[in-house]
Length: 220
Image (cartoon, rainbow, N blue to C red; front, side, top):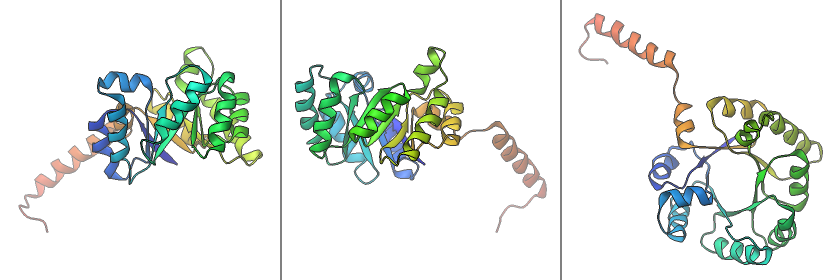
């Protein structure tokens, strides 16, 4: 299973990319807007940092299908490790088909159903990104959808990778692991919480106290 960071923050990407824990980055217009920098320069710098580590998903911001198609090509030219995020909307299906035919890797984003996932797999999207947290917000079990998509992709032997997105809690990450997602894209705050457990800290404290009782000043 691969882990992506869901952020456009250079500081966090520089910190975690070299550790071997991160296999890619996903950005979106909201992330780039929060950084307040020139988005083209920001994307190029992220891609440079991630060049040896993995893909960077960058979302189109145009609305009309033909301008989306042209923008996707322009974004893809910024770096060799860019994947283009295109919303899973019926008005963009032909655009996705054309981009895939052009050899551009597509991350189909804003996916909320098994049916949408099937259509994106048939179009050849490299990644299919269901949004777990947003489904939970409307009372739908997002984790159950991950299991359904996993079964569908395996049953029909599609090559698309399942990329679980909109993960709000460590429990979400736990759930998508059990349901067999290929990739989880995780906000930095959740990623760092995955490293923590209160019993780990208590255990360290106990070992330190016991070691001090031994009175050894040098070991080994």
